[in-house]
Amino acid sequence: MADTPLTSRGVATRQRIVEVATREFAEHGLAGARVERIVAAARTNKAQLYGYFGSKEALFDTIFHGSLERIVNVVPIDAADLAGWAVRLYDEYLRRPDLIRLATWVRLERRPAGHLVEPADRLDSAKLAAITEAQSAGLVRAGDPFDLMAMVIAMSMAWSPVSNVYAATGQEPPEAHESRRALLRECVRRVVTPG
Image (cartoon, rainbow, N blue to C red; front, side, top):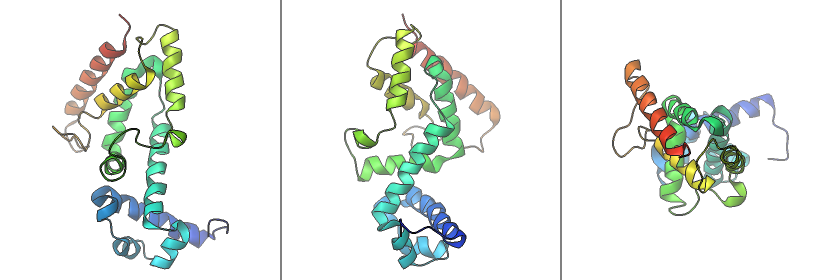
């Protein structure tokens, strides 16, 4: 089916499957998600789902890689302002908690150690190059660019939907978010600033 152009109706069906499956996988993970629930909610059938994606695992992978690309595109890194990047990540987790939950399911169910995605598929190269460039310009402390990126991302997730301490939501008072943003910005700034 991948080589056959989709009709507008086919595109709409495929998009419904992706939207429903995103919610299903975010809530239940790969093992707990049910194709029957996905096709029922997407108003389609298993044959179409498998025709578009091949398998439940391939559907999960499609959705997960799409979520990574979304975060990269919606929240592009600014290595000269890693503190601001961390705050923008925090805000994206509030807007789309399902995306961070998908990454957590990948960590729990598929890749318990090492990189979250295969090195060849990683979207980190542009981020690492930006951090390296900022280090060369004296804007970011010395150290392994990957470790610095990992630290900033981890700090941005302090109140994410998968936090071990407290999961923030968009329904909380704006002043709670502003306070967290200020703390996050200051902490990241202190961690990444040279000297």
